[in-house]
Each structure stands twice: as structure tokens, then as C-alpha cells.
Amino acid sequence: MLVLRRVARSSAIPLTLSIVTVVICSGTALAQSESKADSLIASEREVVTVPVVIDGRVLFRVRGVTAFPAAERAAAIAQRIRGVAEDGAIPSNALHLVANDQWTEVVAGEKSIMAVFDADAAAEAPGLSRQALAQIYLKKISSALEQYRAEREPVQLVRNAFHIAGWTFLLLLVELATLGSLRWLTVRIGQRYQSAIEHIETGTFRLIRAGSIWVATRFAARLFALVAALTILYVYLHIVLDYLPWTRALSANLRGLTVVPLLVLARESVATIPRLLVIFVIVVAARYIIRLARLFFSAIGNGDIKFSGFEAEWSKPTYNIVRVLIIAFAAMVCYPYIPGSGSEAFKGITIFVGVLFSLGSSSLLANIIAGYTMAYRRAFHVGDRIKVGDLLGDVTEIGLMVTHMRSIKNEELVVPNSIILNSNVINYASLSRKQGLILHTAVGIGYETPWRQVEAMLLIAAERTPGLLREPAPFVLQLSLNDFAVTYELNVYCDRPSEMDRLYAELHRKVLDVFNEYGVQIMTPAYIADPVEPKVVPREQWFAKPAEAAAPLKISSNAQNSVKES
Image (cartoon, rainbow, N blue to C red):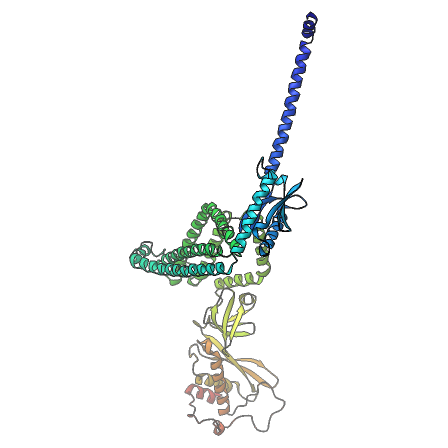
């Protein structure tokens, strides 16, 4: 006994250390085993299961393995159940269980529907046996078979068709009532709040239009009616599709196909309301600034407001430039608040649009810039007769990109502004309003005719031509002394450039008459030898058939004196 005590005393410290070591190891092992159990339970809880669905109804859920995933297993089981249900030779009470050491099989006659494993029972509930789970599955499948066959009976299908017709008739009545309520509500609002809306327009100095308020009111009423109609249609489809076994799955998934995306969209929309409010405020402010700018430049164009050095005709192009600048500034301010503006997709789309715009808008921008440049250059106005290159006509419209002209043959000429900007432009009307436009024509007369007589006859022709200005007076220039003739140029003034072609024709007629009257031959353009008889028309042949006789020409006293002097 004493020895045992001594041994115990001598080994007390090592024993204590051993006990502590055993406890620590035991705790570590226990912790490891508990962690393994917890991980096993967690892995069992995280098992992916897929429902077995027949006619839109979920019978139960099954798990799978790597070689045979849960989705494929559920689809195969559902296909076997439908095959048995469509086989009328197999009654629903013919289902039974066949068990062995590894699984329990649900069999219908001689056809196997599914096999239940221990892992399936462990995944469903702790302590649930494989046999009990298989018995539950058997009852579910048996009930599904009876319901599958009963719903496809002709009597049941006819009954369901009557129900669908009744719900359809009710839908039409409700939709018609909704449309009638919308019209009644619109008329009621118009009768009751007409004066209030007009008062709002007057109080805001017509910045807020009554028409805009009516548009917003009608839009809100129509939107409410549309939401109500869609809600009624959703309820109708959910009820009607559930009557038929072939569409019951669609009825069950209708919420996921319609309501869930709308809820997600509504959630995202609510999240972006603050940003949308900022964008709304910026757009409204930009719109009213543009409206004020339009009123300001309209007053300048009408002459109500005047600035030294700023022409009234510049008001419209300047307003367009200011409007573009305001819109561009508002767009830059709104850009960070646009939902999704920071996403890569949005950035990619903006870059793509920018590239397309830069590639396809070179000529567009050139014409726009040319249009504004012409507006500030004041090269011509609407109604002026101009010549651009080989094109001659009256300006009918000056656009931002092109200018429209009407030719002397009544043809419409559409000229890009960039071409006008890079071409020489002759304006026949700009100086004719104050100083008159000079029309000129040249004739070649032989050296045997005195120059004073020629100039007098040309002045007589100018005096006889109607439509020309008497002040400043016409004048004649001797342009050149050619080999066989002298070239004389008659210059006359007119104040109607749009009639210059008619005036030229009439002037040429009078020149021919005067030179024929005085027996002077016109040598234009040139000749080889003097003819035996001069190339003139005697007076008695001036009105040869089919020309009609006219009153005798009267020569002014000044012209007669000039001819006598010559």
C-alpha cells in the first residue's frame, strides 16, 4: 500500500500531463468529428433537387448524381408517369413496390417508374426510411395517374370549355366597362376642370400650355385604363389556362413570365427615381430656357428689339445655334444621371453611335456649317435672282443644308450649301433695289456706218423697250474695233431682275426693228464678204404672215435728232 502511494506520488505530475494530453486530443478528435458531421449535414442540405411535374402540378422533388443529374432524372420519371397514364390497360391500383438491398422500385404492372435510394430518404428528412419514402412516392404517382386520366375525359373537357366561354364573356364585359369608364372620366374631367386649366395657362404667361395639361391628363387616364385592362387579362389567363391540363403549366408559370419581370422592372425603376427626377428637372429647365430664347429672337426678328450691328434676319439662325448649345449642355449634365450610363454596354453603344455619326456626317456637317455661314454672310435672300456656277434661278427657300431655286424654265434646283459656299455667287438683285441692274447686249456694225448713227439707233431701241428705267439713262460703249466690224454694247437699267430674260428678248426685238427701219446691216458675229444686197428687212415686210399688223413705230425727237446729226 505504501509502495502504491509512493508510485502514485512519484507519477502524479506525468499522470496529470497525460490526462491533459488525452483530454486535448479527445477534444480535438471530437471537434474534427463534429466538423465532419456538420459538413456532411451541410452538404446534404445543399443537395440540388428538381421537381417532377405532371400537368403543371409538382408531385415531389428528386436529387441526382454526376452521371445522372437531377433535371434529367426528374424529366425521365415524368415521362414514364405520362406513359403509364396514357396506357389505359394499366389501372392506377396496379402500382406496387419492389425492394432489394440497394433501392426500392415503384412499378406499374411490368413497367418501372422510378427507384428510391437511401440517399433520397436522407435528403428528404433525417430518420426517414427508404421504404417509407417509396410508399409516399407511390401514393403521389397513383393520385397523379387518376387525375391525369380524369381531366382528359370528354365530359370533363366539355365542362371546362363551358367554363372558359363564361370567363371569356365576363372578360369582354369588364373590358367594355373599363373603356366606357375611361371615356366618362375624360369627359368629366374636361367639364369640371376646364376653367382651372385655362387659369393655370394664364397664370404662367402661357409657359404651361392648356393643351399640354390636357395631353398629360389624357395620358394618365389611358395609362390607368391600360394597367387595369392588363391586370384583368392576367387574372383571366391565370384562371382559364388552369382549366386545361395542357396549359396548366403555363398558368402556373404565368406569374414568373409576367409579374416577376414587371416587379423586377418596377424595383429597378423605383431605385432610379431620384436620378430620373434630376433628369426631369434638367429637361424642364432646358425646355423653358429654349422657349424664352425663341421669344427673345422672335422679338428681334419682328423688330421689337434692336441691337446695333445685329441684323433682324440673323435671329432665326442664331436661335437655332443657341437651341443646339442648350440641348447639348443639358445632355452633358443629364448623362451621369441616366440609368446604366456607367455600364460597359452603354459605353459601347455610345462609342458605336459616335463612330457611325463621325463616318456618315462629314457632308452633313459641312452643309450645315455652310448654311449658317451663308446666313451671316447675307450673300442673297429669298426672292433674289442668283447664279451659282452654271445654275441660274430665283431663290425660293434657304434651308439649313440646301438652298432651293426656281430656274427661268420653272425647274426646281436644289443646291447643297457647301457647293454654294465654295462657288462664285452672282446676285442680280442685291444692288438693283437701289442702283438698278444693268442689262447689256452687243452688236457688230460695219465701218461704213457712222458710229454716232449706231449709238443713236441703239438708244432709240432702249427707249422703245417697256420695263426699263429711264433714270439712270441708257448708254452705249464701243467695245472693240474688229477686222470687219465695230462692236457696240448697249447698257440699260432695270429694277426687276426676275424679268431680265423677258426684258432681254424685248430689247433685242427693238434693236432689230430699229436697224431694219434705218437700213443698217448687223454684222454680228462676222462675215467673209460684203453681200450684193444689205441683209436688212424692209419695213413693208415686218408684219408678213403669220405676224399680225401693229401700230406704226414712233421715233422720239431725241432719237430723230441723233440720227439726223449722224
